[in-house]
Amino acid sequence: MLLLERPLGIRVTAVPYQWLTNAALAALGTTRAQCTAALQFVDRSGTIRTGADAVNALLRGHPLFGLVVRLALCLPPVVRFERRAYAWVAAHRDRISNLLGTRRYALITDDGAGPS
Image (cartoon, rainbow, N blue to C red; front, side, top):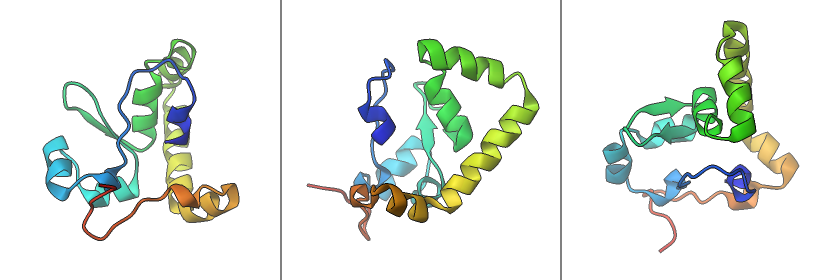
């Protein structure tokens, strides 16, 4: 969410998974557990990309970042590094959020319903 608050010149709809019901997530082709584990990017055709691949899919539409992403995807070692880095960040998400002071943005409910 924070990244999307800055103007990137990319048209996407960012929806916190916590605001969606399990049925709505299933309709998108994902689950609450998958969303909890990693970013999910669903494109217009319904293709889902996860984690670092989701970030790449998102940034591929940006004029400058898109070029960098397309070049990086040509280099398998870079892709492996991205995926490992994403996994590390995801595993330490709570600690990083606390350090950055972004914990207040978490909107988690037991039933998956978000703000009314």
